[in-house]
Length: 135
Image (cartoon, rainbow, N blue to C red):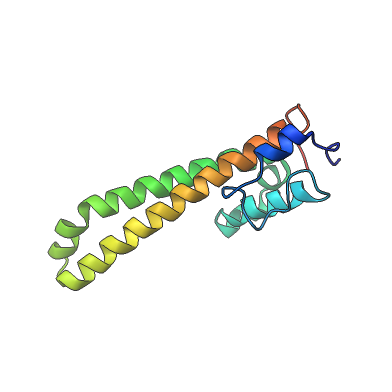
């Protein structure tokens, strides 16, 4: 069931650079479905077969947030241990530096994505004033 027309206050909260371009603007017809697609695309493909994950947006959004947190932790460990571990594995200094730059870049991407996920989650939860449990 789509949301009722959003108030100007709500609509203004969910505009700006953190709103993902792949999601229809908040409050427009189909924006919730586009949000669900975007969230599902952030998870490994195997999750698409889990009905709870695909049918309950709160579960989906929560798991996306957890997945991003774990990916960020893994990148931070990789970043902090790359020099020692990769040198011990026989990697050249050039490969080590490229790997460190890759980790740092991806950490920034994940940080931005996590910020957008939090915004979309709030929009889905607050757009109607009540938590929604299904699409």
